[in-house]
Length: 292
Image (cartoon, rainbow, N blue to C red; front, side):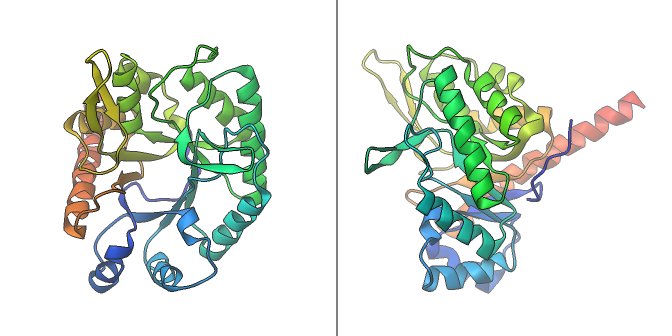
């Protein structure tokens, strides 16, 4: 496996929420890193920045973008890129990531991360946008695999091949969202383990875990929703354990963005992930000992 290019520690991290600022600064919990949505900190000042400055001085920081619209048909918003660059220069985060999705149309911005067909045309567009974004912010970015609910008849390229080609051509890394893998696999009747088996782990700089909601589609089949409003489901944790058996420990974020619980509950989720990372390390050490 080639060396990863990110600098986040191989530990579990949490999304930083305003309701937890004071507790984090007052108790200095043992957490590997914190992640924030970049768009929430694009203002020039105010309380969010005062708290983030203090927390970023104590913990590694990951910026996660949700508004760049990497897959959009229109050119990237240069004003948005400039704001991102300012934020990166201000906080010097250890990681910056974005989604393989689009959210802009004409002059409007859609409050959602929408999927795109995997074709030669969209591949060229995403490659160009990733190149432009990395040049603009002066940093390598990580591109996240999406959760999807529909498949496009126009698609001619497998999702993993699509992501792999983007990474190979731009030098960007990948963010492997294990919950997104499970959501998409169940929704499209695919094998999530087979997806993980084929994923280019040498390009992964961060993993995301989250909780999903479940309903039924019009045919009565399971339909999973990437909801980020509950603890990580057992099947996603099992898939994460399997991922670690292939990758070894990697920086892992617990995403919990809706119905945010108390900090103790979030910390417990992070410790679950760290326990599985320790288990993966022990298994690798035992394997090396048997091979010696």
